[in-house]
Length: 307
Image 1 (cartoon, rainbow, N blue to C red):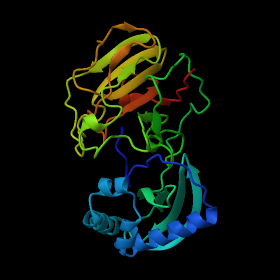
Image 2 (image 1 turned 90 degrees about the vertical axis):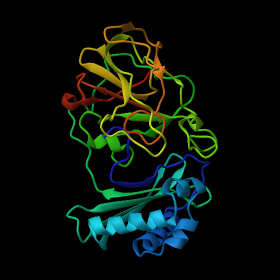
Image 3 (image 1 turned 30 degrees about the vertical axis):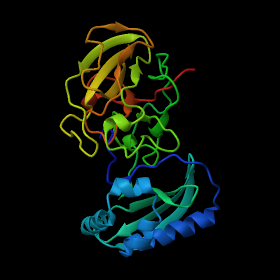
Image 4 (image 1 turned 120 degrees about the horizontal axis):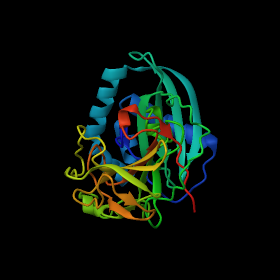
């Protein structure tokens, strides 16, 4: 799991200026582009995408290959169960849930439109339910503060799989992915190098007083477009902040972590620097709270930040 989008994600949503669409217009617009994609008429859909979206996909041939893989895996759409619109941050969202010939589970197709009615994000995946949790009403024992300075953007976060793909995982049920956005993008120039990303090498801070339980610091930072599925968390720190409350801070820059297991830290102490190690699509900070220091055995906890 960690911080790679699950299912058949095309691209992440990008923050842009707001624009108000009527629900009917969003559904009509989404239905049009969904039909183009599902019927293989990809040129109009490609032309309607933002440059960042096109870059994330690669080319229209890559979009065509993605569609072919989708049909091979799920078959053709057989029935539309529901269509609706939603608003997430500055985007108007079209959501289409359908049955497909080769899938026993309904498939959800989502398109996000920016202020110019361009397709700024999309994903297609089976409908999923959030992992069951006995901690939905839990109140954090530790006084957590944001593990960075300045203004960051919640890239994934929330309690439903639509808002937060981590929510389907028991341990990462309430996880966050944080990035820095400027002028509607997370990077300068083409975003081809890790150094292009605004959060790269930014200090990652202890969110509360606590004790360092474990540290990994030697893994290489991945080049953009590559991932390390064998080491999903990458370089990371596990911090005990209260009894049965362990904070995981992941994907740090190689060689940047300044603490060791057994160290006592105070809120605001620098733990390391934001990087791109592990199973990650771009530099960012993954943060979650859980009941144990071992990922495979823990249950996720809601993390509430003060100030």
